[in-house]
Length: 187
Image 1 (cartoon, one colour):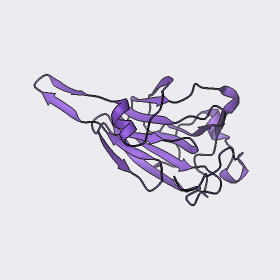
Image 2 (tube, rainbow, N blue to C red):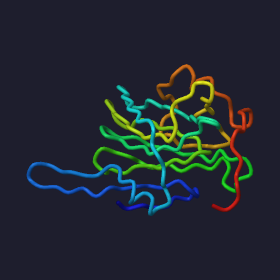
Image 3 (cartoon, rainbow, N blue to C red):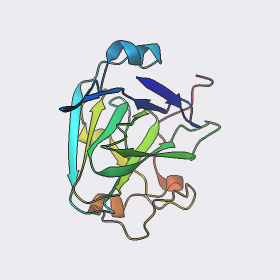
């Protein structure tokens, strides 16, 4: 696996190696030892799988607050997405900054999104499937969101009129959202 750092400390792009022949290809999408070498040593407890029928479907920006905060390892197994992480840690020098990475079934890249970051994605193709590992189980009482089009964050999603859930359409702006995460200094 190749692990590349992003402009947001802790957020990483993970690219598995593919081994192909006349039959097709094989790859390890997760390998605990290799990720631990990159500083990601977690016990994943939940796998999620989403399907979005239409191009331009946007899911996010979501977080799960302590005590059930989640790290995520996200990949696109069909279609394509722009996957986004936003620093949501109060006091962080990169608070409110974002990074976006195109994940596709073809490029096999994955995005590691640690606790303390908002997460969201927009589909770049119809019939897109996204799978991700979580380090804690879903807890509805810890579920939160920030508006996808918050001007203080300024994400370029590539669409002005995405397909949204009701929850995402009415999420608060960053300045009005609870602040459940604090930056703990240099990591």
